Image 1 (tube, one colour):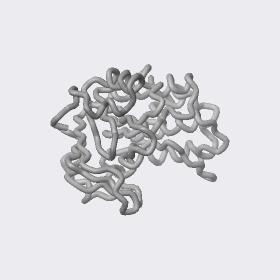
Image 2 (cartoon, rainbow, N blue to C red; image 1 turned 30 degrees about the horizontal axis):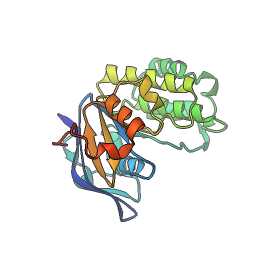
Image 3 (spheres, rainbow, N blue to C red; image 1 turned 120 degrees about the vertical axis):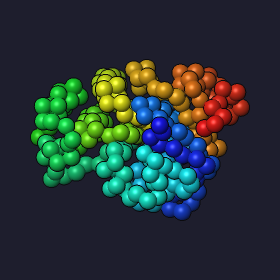
Image 4 (spheres, one colour; image 1 turned 90 degrees about the vertical axis):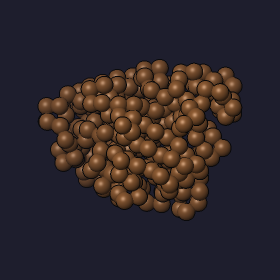
Length: 242
């Protein structure tokens, strides 16, 4: 069963088309890495899927067999979508512990376990992201996601501006979560360092305003690193039905 099905869809930002004829099918328990040059629309795609204001995806788009156009951002979140941001915002006056207790779908002892796994214990009584380093912000994004138990976890450059230790911590927790929960994921990455510590099912490259999907993420990454993104367009290993 496809948890997310996108067929011939366009992505618009403030009514301007930035992607067209996007095709992507993600089954339950399956994860994609989303690659592409700067400005190719990776972040715009994720923001349109979660339903942020100003971002729209038009076409045959279904999440859990429900048409996304019939769900607002709150309904998408309640049905298990979660987006970890590339640039998390500071939220003054909101304590992390209080926020986690309100959004969590897991027992308190499970929250405590993930706090320690992500090495956030010394920060847990602070306001959200106030005075945090880049790595601490990204680890907190993952913590917020995990306690919500999403069925589709979208991660926008969770490894950007992050040191190696944080990348390893984040990757280990995410791999554990995907394995234990059977959740699906979309991972946007630019530097791709996190893929040294994570296994993903397939790769999708956004290029020239559309999508190109492939069954072997490591081979795609190797091709991109040696030949550039343009080599993906004519590759004969594309998934033609996607």
